[in-house]
Image 1 (tube, helix red, strand yellow):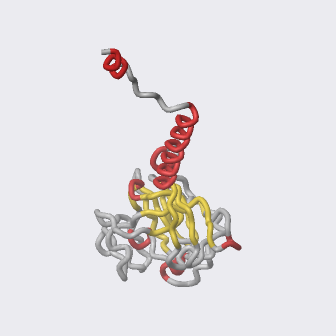
Image 2 (cartoon, one colour):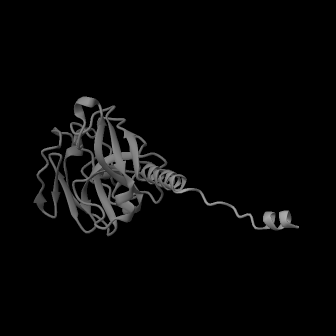
Image 3 (cartoon, one colour):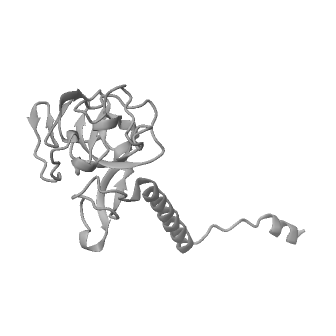
Length: 214
């Protein structure tokens, strides 16, 4: 009877303080890595559309967390990764407004209704409500020429001159490559909804001699 009572009173021991500490640290590390894997993603630059800022083969880290959860949202001048409209990767690019965005001085003011499965990287040059024109490859925003030392010379091609203004719809962004003479961007497939933006390119980590902010 005594032995039976002894067995009946045995309780499961709690792990000691050292084991508890190890478990807490392991759990914290797991969640930190999981959040980082979701928030920050690497991308490789596939084309020269962002030269001279980003070269073919450069690798950047894109912060997806701030775009979705932090206040402030998107800003003019930020370089972002996004999903373009369906047809943006076609040659020529498909505009959602028939007869526009064909490179004949008539910019596209409406994208196709669905987004592509690919991702692009460009610079935000306009937000909802902005009126955007292009002169010699440079942006005129709300009638004010923008300082764009980062932009490559555009030349005399028709795609460098879009005197007709496009008004960016509320909730959308207007995106251009820095290499205006060799970039498929909002001039040809229109502004896009903010929801299609994946995140901001916050750092270039490759090649080693170009590590830093893009």
